[in-house]
Length: 218
Image (cartoon, helix red, strand yellow):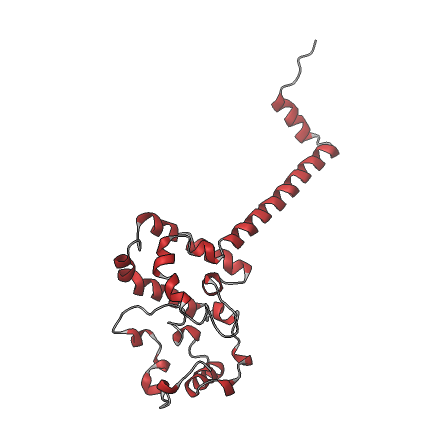
């Protein structure tokens, strides 16, 4: 009686002479697996973009979140609120994936207690802020522009310095949103050289002699 071929032999024969039914099963398996993978991937991206996820560790909840809750991005007259990911994660899918990969190294900071205590956070705050400011400059404040479009700004409702800076940015493109709005959602790091972080166009001698003390949010 001829010996029955083993599993590997049967598999090899099937690969050499694939049957339509077998090909259909394999194709269906990979198709369903692809859908499940993409759904899982999209779900993971959505969950990691939520405010609850961002403040899931005490470093963010205790050191950063309180200042954000006092900002105009958290509570304002229009009720439009920007959560953490709106400002720190690009909306475009490809840019978002790159940003998520970059942010994965923050897990190491969590494991090593890099900013675990208030004194550690204060020590590294300027470094962390500068890193984020540089990222905004490189992408021309992309996250800001996801919600704010200068071409639709009503300059009649802005103060004189805002009108000057926004029009100059539109016409000359010498600087970007983050150069003026560093402290819009977080308390600025303590430094005596903060003005030196901005480009030359933002130095006081290049600004019109406006009285910033009379500026309001209206």
